[in-house]
Image (spheres, rainbow, N blue to C red):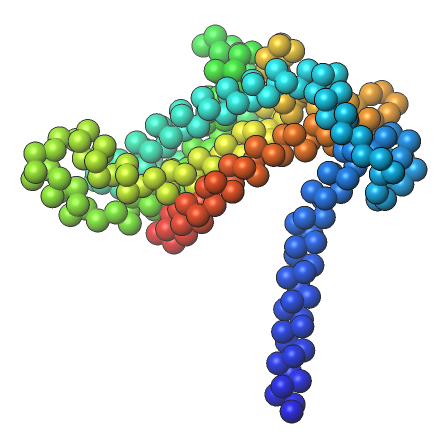
Length: 277
C-alpha cells in the first residue's frame, strides 16, 4: 500500500511539472493570440480577459499601418541569403576539419569556437567599419553576411560532429567506384548529412528571423527594414498599440512554428548526433 501511494504521489508530481512546463511554453502564445483580437480599450481594461467580440481586422490594419508586409519580404530575403552563405561556409569548414589533417588544425577549431563567446555588442563599431569599407553597409546582402558570421561557430561545431558520424569507408568506396571529390560530396556526404544541415539551418534561420538589434543598426533605409524593425512603429512616444503589436507578432511567429513543425524530426536527430559527437 505504501509503495502504491508513493508511486501515485510520484506520478502526480511529474504530471504537475509537465503541466507547468506546458503552461509556461504555451501561455505567452495564447495570451498573444487573445490580445491580438481585442480592442485597445478592452486590452487596457483587462489584459488577461477574453474579448467581447474578436477583432480579426486587427491583423489587416496592423499589416497595412506598419508596412510590415515589405518587412516580411525583406526578412525572407535576408534569411534565405544568410542560411545559404552559412551552409556553404560552415559546411565546407566543418568537412575540412573532419576529413583533413594539417598543422594548426586544433588551433583553427579553437579560434572558431572562441567566436561563439564574443558578444555582438563589442563588435558593432569594427563591423560597421568593415561593412562600409567593402560597400555592404545598409543593404540586405551585408546583413545576411553578418547573420552568417554570427552563427558560423555554432554551425561549424554541430556539422563537424555530424560529419564525424559518417563512416569514412563510404567515401572511400565511392572513390573506388570512380567518383571524384565533388561526386563524393554530392552522392555520399550531403545526402547523409541532411539532418545535420536541417537542424543547424533551422536554429540559425529562427535567430535571423527574430533579430532586431543588427537589422536596426546596420540597415537604416525604411524600404529595406526587416519585419522585427517594422514592429517599432507600434511604439509611440506616450503609448503602445498592444492589439496591433500582438497581431503583428502573431504573424511573425507563424512562419517559425511552421518551419519547426516541418523539420522537427530532422532537427532533433541532427542536434543529437552533432551534439554527442
